[in-house]
Length: 172
Image 1 (tube, rainbow, N blue to C red):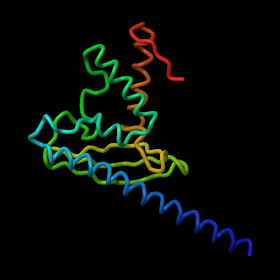
Image 2 (cartoon, rainbow, N blue to C red; image 1 turned 135 degrees about the vertical axis):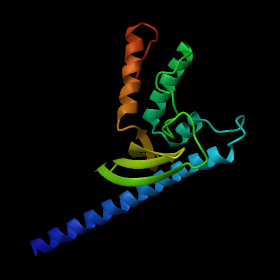
Image 3 (spheres, rainbow, N blue to C red; image 1 turned 180 degrees about the vertical axis):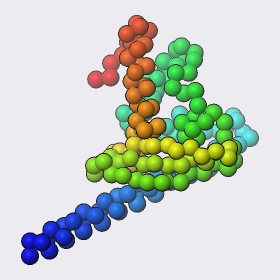
């Protein structure tokens, strides 16, 4: 009897994780489809084309958006890119109308965090991007791009310019 209960509990856990990974896969596909559709729709209208900042505000976690805005403000102050020298949504500076995304895998880290591997197709090239997504505000949001490199780079540069005395920073 104990063995049957254990098997049933394992099956329920497996089905729950499988449902969560499907939900995350759909959410990531929906996010990228929205980003790419908007870019292609406004292909020739640069005055009305949404920027990465617009999509960041919709789809980044609260913490990543705060960090990204802080580094953006620093880039404006210095008048040079630090992190934003390419578009992180398309993994390049340029983009073509053949934009597409495919979720390759979803791996649950815990019930509120997962790693998602996506393939971004842009200008006849494929780019593998590893996202970290978190569950907050009743949905899944991107908490990092580039296999945790984006967050680490932002924190590094914010700390560097704080030590140089160029900015005063409080992230507490």
